[in-house]
Image 1 (spheres, rainbow, N blue to C red):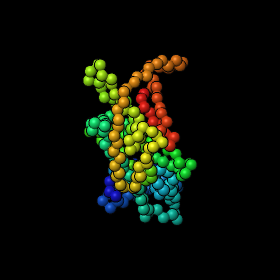
Image 2: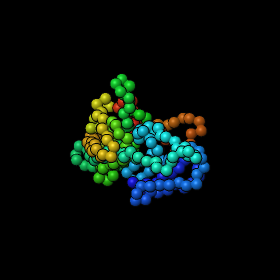
Image 3: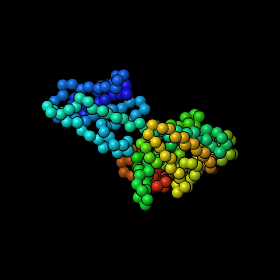
Image 4: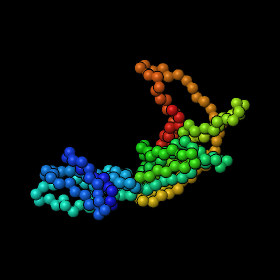
Length: 230
């Protein structure tokens, strides 16, 4: 892989970039234990001999008089991609919608959505793309403050409720998306607008500065909690 940025952990040296043959080299190092990291377009940042993108378990490299460190092979794991288009029930694209992807972990009764999530926002065509995902199952949440502005003051404004792939507002009916290394899977969604409501109030807490955030969350699929508004 050419054009890969390789970094050395444990010494103050600049990263190197691989050439057409994919080779890299760090010279003049003292004997000791080091770590390697690499990143490239199409590959998220990874450590040497990292087992998977989901868990950063790697291998250190020991240099010294009797250590062989001149023919290392740094294999990068290609990330998967989830991409799709978000439209409303009228067939119109929904721009500015947040798409949250939670990785599913565990089996059986222990199956749950991890707290960390990947994040994307739909563009003006309602399209989104999330690269660099670990292989496995993912649940998608479509949420945000995107609304359809009422054309007339007498018309009730509309908003989109938090929706889960493939297009349900019931978190228990959310379907998982299967991601494979180096492959792209499409996950389109259709959102049904509902009458919008407004929630307002006052937060009475000491030392609370102006501009602080208030989060409203809802129970998501497999224990996740996607934010709705701030």
